[in-house]
Length: 239
Image 1 (cartoon, rainbow, N blue to C red):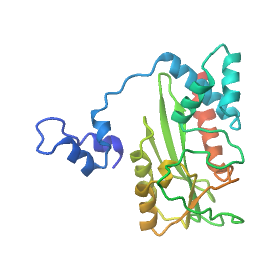
Image 2 (cartoon, rainbow, N blue to C red):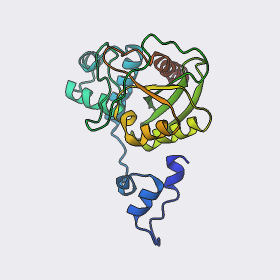
Image 3 (cartoon, rainbow, N blue to C red):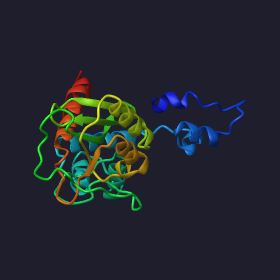
Image 4 (spheres, helix red, strand yellow):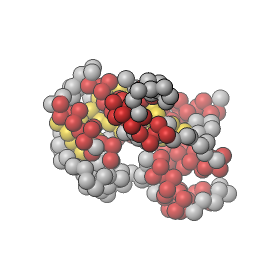
């Protein structure tokens, strides 16, 4: 069951169960039930969309170069603002260095299992990643699980926040269809979460995480993001 479907089950009034209990039973964040969304400013939307365009074209650009490019375009966010927006968008420059995604300091990190290994058959190696998708008045986050051999998208999920449940929904849907031998990700907090790794362990999947110098390991998913953004976002914007 997806997060939006679980949200529809929440009874905010005339319920025998308090919201805290309902959140626990439905696997939802309690704070999300009280949160009243506030639309982002037009300036924030514009800057984040431009960051996404620049990053999609130049994924090796960091916050310094993106900030400089924005200034050339007469947009004037400081580098600190660009860094914060990139963090909120879940993106970081692709370069051969460790810790491209923010990891939770208390979560276990698993070893990298794909050194000198190439995917040889369907369901041998799967990769998972999250990207930012711009909309006309806001944005969404897209998580996808990709079979590295066939390039088949096993499962995907969209959400308007970077909270964990939408990732878990995609994982559950993927594992309901098949089980890979190896499941690879970066070391971001979503993918080191015990709720996430417990699902993979229960399915007897070997967990692999990109380590130092492995920035391009999820290149197949990165290519997918570029295809989605150029063909399904940029093309439609032009139209």
